[in-house]
Image 1 (cartoon, rainbow, N blue to C red):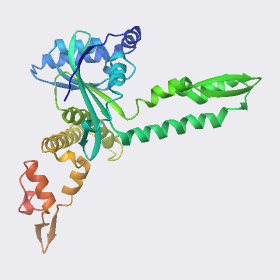
Image 2 (image 1 turned 45 degrees about the horizontal axis):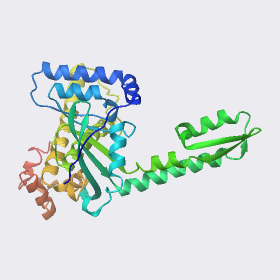
Image 3 (image 1 turned 180 degrees about the horizontal axis):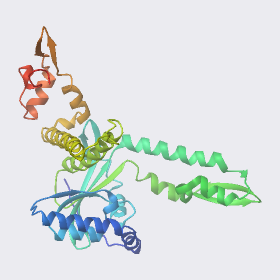
Image 4 (image 1 turned 180 degrees about the vertical axis):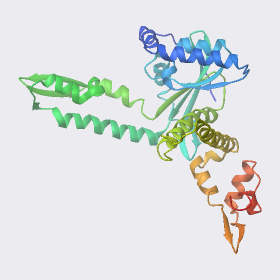
Length: 328
């Protein structure tokens, strides 16, 4: 993999952005302090892009905390990486596979303030197509709703209808009638980013490890959402504090187990061809059934055996290895 080193300084816009996310800075400082207080010598912070700032990067680096965080396209570092990799990102030499999807990957050493780090530009054509389709549908919907039409207050109507898409239009007024024209350069800049993600890591890792670790964060967030909504964990209708604590403990353990399975699947290279959902779906077909008063294990398929062996999980041979005696 080819590496290049560059220095990309922050602009006034980035400094303003850091002021806006002051609450994230405080949150991160408190979290760093808590990690130190607990005596944790090795940790990895996986953060969303709202926590990105030079101050936060320096805070984690000074505390010897490993981190993975997506770079916003709006900051100079992100703009620079997109611009510099745009032409070569789709080279056949950069095509990789992850979870059955094809990603084009470029890596480079970068510097955030005084901190050395590693940037990974990931491009997925499938996602690019979805984002492009959604973007232009929204653009055309706005045009159909107001272009060439009369309104009591056309400018206010345009701002309400366009929302954050206002930046992609120029408008002219003819009395109370508004006419729209597309800002081609602004649209091109937006479309150029579709399908792309930039992940920043404090240390050099394989690109698929960085992506997998970052997706684990999304997975945990989604699972908490599933607990609240699909599994109707929230609201918890319990009367005792002890019962509430017990339920939350079980839910938390279940999320930890899923994270362990995800990590083992990644280490076993199973995610190259299948998603974690597909792996768990296949394993869920293995069941213990009660026949003639006795619990019996259904046949372990060749695919299930392969998954279990690669994840270094003992292949069950008896029903009591998957359920407790008595059918509990």
